[in-house]
Every structure is written in structure tokens, then in C-alpha cells.
Image 1 (cartoon, one colour):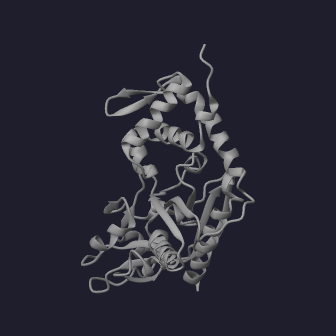
Image 2 (cartoon, helix red, strand yellow; image 1 turned 90 degrees about the vertical axis):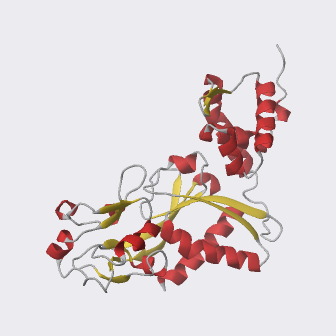
Image 3 (cartoon, rainbow, N blue to C red; image 1 turned 120 degrees about the vertical axis):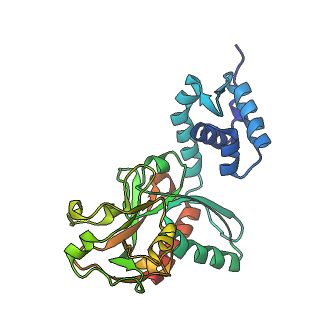
Length: 300
């Protein structure tokens, strides 16, 4: 039996393996890692040779992992976490290292925080590479699998390995076009209005942030959208309304009028969420600090 030379397996090779496993596609793995498809194919060939297993077989337009590949997922992730822990207390100089991070967030935090962060970082000579995915109602497995390294969400997932920090709180408001209607005068008027609503890919809707409200009395939405940026096109010039945080007025819903809800409702809090593997990583701590500083200016 051929002896496996484990020294051929470095962190980049293992990271590539997990990415292919999660994406079931060489091209998608290449896009996510920011490398060419040929580089991914070369790494996969190396893995197959070292491990003596095909690991992935072609299935339609994608790849299907073998039993060996599936069995390797957890131990490979533990190895990568252990390698990352070696750097937890290392000196960190943001001017000499590139910070690359994948972030799960929806339209408002993405637009209000990260353009400022990127501009300031580039002005200071710090190399930051940002990737984004919609968070919807976030799943902690996104963090555990390292598909993203950070979340900004009003609905933080729970778990003993999941860390969170409150960034900002904002009251809910009614967004509308003042040229076409007045804001709802009371609860009955609000419930009877025609609503625009965001619904996430998992089927849950953005109204999940409305706590302490009997939503069964609210009329079903007239328009259901996949993201918040599409709301103004439907509300402008119509009698439709949308319910979102006041912070949306600084971002995706800037073109619309807004007014307080005509009933009591708890404010919405936005949290920054990360996995324990990044709790002490100096680059991650640096990034979290910059995000929190910008969020504090939004609250003010």
C-alpha cells in the first residue's frame, strides 16, 4: 500500500477541498476563492493522488462527493481551525497583510457600513477584500462551515460556538410615497394597507423582526420581493407601504418618505456575529473593531 505523504496537504489545499465540497462545483469554488478554474482542478488532482480517492464524481452540471470526501469534512475543518489558532496571538500589522472576508448581510448593513469601511481602509493603505452573500434569516452552519466569516443580522443564530455583538438599534418605520398617500393613522389603517414585503430564500419574511405584534391581522403582502433594494420601485408612485428600520432611510429606502408606526413595536437591533474560531484572530478583531466604530456613527 502506498504511504500517504501528509506534507503535500497544506492549508490552501484543505481550504480548496472544503470549498469544492460546499459548492459542488469547480467553477463556483474558483469564484469564491478568487482563483482560476485550472488552479482548482490542479489542487483537486493533487488531493486525489495523495488520498487515493476520486473525492468528487461528475453528476449533471455539478459534482457529487464520494463517501470518503464526506467523511473528511469534519476532520479537515478541525485541522484548519487548529492551523488558524496558531496565529491567534501573532503580531498583526494591517498595512502588511491583506484582509479577506466573506460577509452574510442584507442590503441595509451592507450599504451603510462597508463602503465607508473600504474607503477608509484604502485611504490608510490597508488591503481589504470583501465578499457578500444575503443573510436572510441566517443559519449558524454558514459560520461553522466557514462559508462566511461574519454576519450582520437582526436575527442572530444561537449556539455555544457562536459569538455576537450588538452594533445598533433602530425603530421600525412605515415607508411610503407622500405624493400618493398619508402614512397609516392607526393599527386598523395599517393592517388594511397594501404592503410590500421582503421574503428570504428559505421562505421566511422580513416581518420576523416585528416583535410583540399580532401579525395575523395584517393584510397579506401585495408585492413580495427578494431584497430591500427593490422596494422603492414599487412604493414610489403608489399607495403601497413597507415596514423597515429607520436606518433604511440612510440606505436602500432613501428615496421614500417615512413615519413612525401608529402602534407600539420593539426597535430592531442589528448584531455582528462570528464563529469562535475567529474570536481571537487579530485580523478579524481589527475588522470587527472598524465595523463597530462605523455602526456607532449610524446610531448617533
